[in-house]
Image 1 (tube, rainbow, N blue to C red):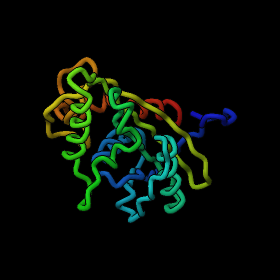
Image 2: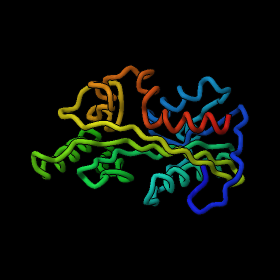
Image 3: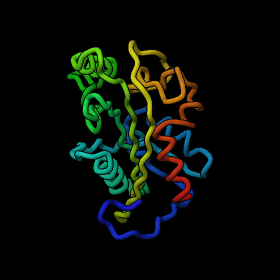
Image 4: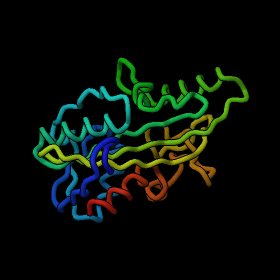
Length: 211
């Protein structure tokens, strides 16, 4: 997938071997490692390589995913895959969106229970008729040390529920019910979530393009 305004070019293929997963989020690393398992890739996380976490200064999912992927590829000398994803709530004008993780930030690290409560409080402030439609977005950026980048965007539609349910997922998973189901992401078996998630949608596109 080419960035907006770019001249279309052939998508670069990814050879088997080591690939840096440019994330310090253990949940994301687990999901991406599982998705990569069938393709002859040897995933290694940014945390395992002691790579720093770059400041996410982008205002779009595309920008932040590219920033993280380029940083990891530059520092490691290996291809790197980064994910930038977030929860977009229709009644909140798409918030928290690209600032999804920021809503969880505290002086002692990220508190996802607090983040979920902030979303629920913001909806409550809209009144009893506020809709609960929401979707997750995931942009995967695959970067090589020479600066080449490919992007892939996935989505998952659903609704928010309260109180949170389930213990399997991470982030906002306990309050997100995917379309066509009554369980939250955090109540799904990981294999079920991998089949329908926004990250899986983006990953399917990546697989079709680069493997």
